[in-house]
Image (cartoon, rainbow, N blue to C red):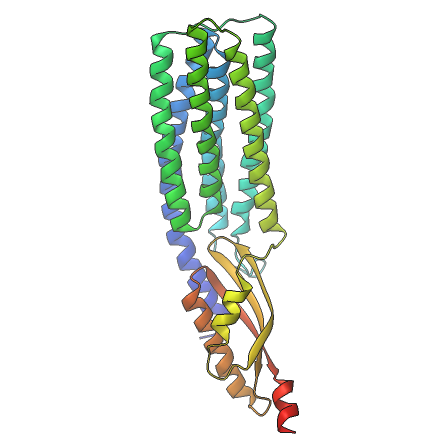
Length: 307
């Protein structure tokens, strides 16, 4: 079977299984995120609490990002084709950047509410229900963040890991809002808009971090340890050395390009066999590597020594 066809079929099967698992995670977290955001925003409006309302807007974009993730995973899971020989995996990265952008835009609404609160245009009302809602949603956020982080690592999904960071920031924010509710009860109403400011800063910071990390993947940042690859390659029988090790791709889908030195007297067929061994060895040792391009070169030092 042609090597290119073999690679495409292998990538296609892995992509389909991965798509099903990620889709399942996103649907579960989507339902939980919309339940959390709906409760926070509704109750925030009813009680004029900038802190709770801002936290709700922060949470609603968890749900929006889940929807974007479902679209992105559907596109990125398509197998390689003639126009996209390396697959469509980076579409997931593009949609991950979208999550970051949406988080940054959320800050506008948050700071508008903060301004209204400082201007005396609305005063927060704190009730027992306020604490109940925030504590319950905090528990849900902890579950969602932990679940997405575990599955993101297991499935090597940039989107799930980025989304888990977004949800993790919800946890810190919700804790801050609960503290602000306590302060308001103790007679410090200024704690509510201050909580809103903290929420806005956390949201913006997380959004910029997601955009930065995703952009690095799009510009082909090196994503494998070259020293580890070199160690693996030099253990292959017939390899005299290697250099110009390059890698690119995304989490769980790495492409490696390497120059391997062999005995100058070897035939083309013998050099090809060594190249296949190198490729197989790297894939065995590094599960995230999906393809390896091996350039066979004569070991000039060996040639000079024999001469």
